[in-house]
Image 1 (cartoon, one colour):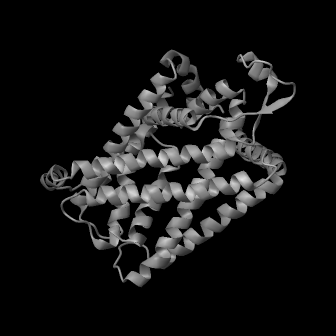
Image 2 (image 1 turned 90 degrees about the horizontal axis):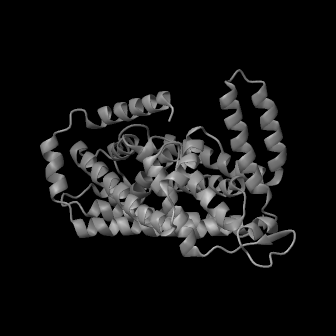
Image 3 (image 1 turned 135 degrees about the vertical axis):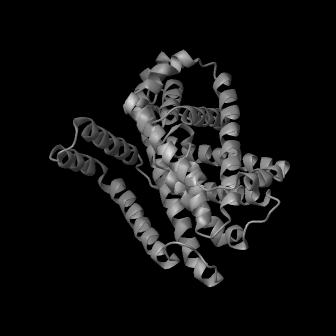
Length: 365
């Protein structure tokens, strides 16, 4: 693991935690934590697992049109594999195990290593190349970004009608930013779908002229080529439309997870936070920030995003910190336990995964 990357990660985590925890009255934080309704909080963690299941269902929509070389399948023991290419149909529960294994590795290693791991696991089972599978994961992230921007824009459009007093930038200003971001994201997806190969070639030419380190240039080109490669295999937009629709369902369930966790606290949060606009705002802002690759488990950055989102509604800082800490720890523990069980169920070993994780840390796709 790169020492400089570790140092940078620790610096980001330390700075984030410093600003989050600075001036906190810990006695009040512990009081809030001791009064949490644990069964209700546990329900919020079950809703998180349900959201992961919806993510798995969405992933299958993206995987269904892909074709694997028959020779690759025959090498994996498939009897009477036909010539040319064949479609595959992955069992949903089996796919869920791979998704949870991926999130398990994301919680332990940097550079989104879990995404590389689940691409490797599915490629090993189906014969699809890891790059092809990884392209569908990149498309997933793009759909998540669009769904979250839509949720953020909707929340900001509804906030003025509620008469809620907020801190920081005005809702109108943030709505314009979210609206422009949403338009660019949807327009970019449409352009990639129509001109995927041309955009990949143009990116390669432009990057080659920029005064950037060769490693950064290579990473940018590989990312665009991977995304373009994933888009051009969809001869029909139907799987993309289905995946986009499920994406909205995913984040509605995540918003319900946030609401359940908020309601588990004995001291009530301001009505502005638990009302639909506030709930959508917190869900969107926190998870948009988490789309950017960060430290294993997003330590520090997750707490900072939660507290910042709550500060927008002028939530008491000790209450916000208590929520951020238990909510993050609960998600990490649940993901690690379920992910570890999924990992074991596939008869995998850490030694087998070590080179895959190392490749992710070197930013190799």
